[in-house]
Image 1 (tube, helix red, strand yellow):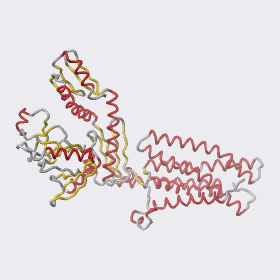
Image 2: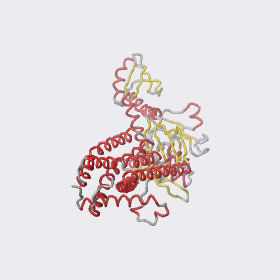
Image 3: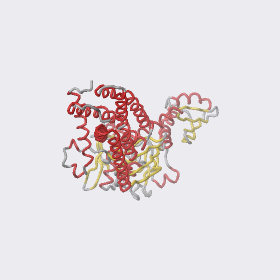
Image 4: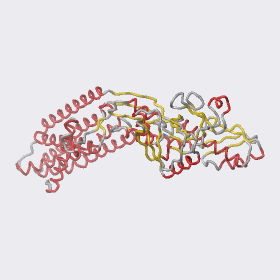
Amino acid sequence: MLYFANWKVLLICGICLLGVLLSLPNLFTPAQLAYLPSSMRKQVALGLDLRGGSYLLLEVDIAAAQRERLNTTIDSVRNTLRDAHIGYTGLNVEGDAIAFTIRETDRVEEAKRDLAKIAPDMTVEIAPDGAGTMKFSTVATETRRRQAVEQSIEIIRRRIDETGTKEPTIQREGQDRILVQLPGVDNPQRIKELLGKTAKLTFQLVDQGITVEDARRGRLPPGDEILPSVDEGRGRGGGAGSYVVRKRVMVGGDTLTDAQATFQNNEPVVSFKFDSIGGKKFGDATRENVGKPFAIVLDNKVISAPVIREPILGGSGIISGSFTVQSASDLALLLRAGALPAPIQILEERTVGAELGADSIHAGAIASIVGVVLVIVFMVLFYGLFGVFADIALLFNLCLMLGALSLLGATLTLPGIAGIALTMGMAVDANVLIYERIKEELRGGRSLLSSLEAGFTRAFGTILDSHVTTLVAGILLYWLGSGPVKGFAVTLSIGVLTSLFSAILVTRLQIVTWLRRYKPKAIPL
């Protein structure tokens, strides 16, 4: 029978009212939204192509990360061979492998067994003449590549979130690339500087036994390295802003739990705090090296090298230097977000002006309005009163779409507007199928109520099939696509669900209400 239980009527009306309430904030300016309750201030977020902002294509330098891991492994190789009293020469990194030569050829197999224990994911090859290499396996390299990109995406997201940027798009492109879209960013240069820094923080001892000048003349001891200073001209030994430091990392920044910009002696500084493991390492390192300079190194540059006056056992400390308020805040942000596993290079940069976005919004709005008006006129001309019912359902459909986008926090892009316009045109397809089916039933001699009931029930299967197939296509577009394709898929999928609800339930509720109130003798189709 063609009727609705009271609870169904209330449910349908409640959903429609909720859609209207959720879509209303999109009609107000940000200033006007301040007068609304906080629960009603959600608007549809505009994408980069509508709001303007920055587009960055980044590349993760996997080769640099691989070299760093090899350089780290060299110390283990050196210590292993020394502990086993196996003579070697030429230990260094060559390409994607660690190269060395075993002097005692009769101990090649012993060296191979010992070196294989260092890293299970590395292959060790030593020729009978003692020439050997250690390199990561193909599986380990690919695993490291995937993990580096995934970790970089997470850290980039943290850094951008710390700046307060809303609705950023951060996603993987290809094997080593990351796409970053930042709607509404008014200072893209600062974002680029934040993303371009690896932010690897280490604490290393300064070697006081040699000057920078002597080290550059070829007297650099094994296990030392020369690092430039952030402050030119302040390096120890007149080395034009450089330090000779031990390669061994006493404490790493990966154990930091917090970092904040603050002031000390009226100068901007960065306070930091370690976790329990890092705090113990930091306390032990400072206790064992009282009176020695301790270099604070960020991305292979010495920020400062204060002398350890006393053990620092509280698990916290201060990084001082020639900071401005902004640079101290940025350093604290980078340390909180964590270090990138590999350097990041900016391959492509584009800036989208807000004017272009405003033009796109205007063009998209005009196209949508024209499309809706034409659909409304068509339905009224062809189906009269029932066309009006379909048009009312269409307006509720639009409200439900905007409300769902606002509620889900989805980002509306220019292709998304195209998806809305397309959905508006498709939304009345279900009504057309129902109305044409009702006409066929009337021509077949059925009664008024029987024709209406048959029109809705028999057309429902066809309507459901068409909507489900469209929804599947939208889901696949969102899953396999990226960027503009995803924006189109989001609005298309939401529009399919809302149009299924409005075209069938909302339209049917209007027809049932009309029948009960006016009790017509004929259907105006």
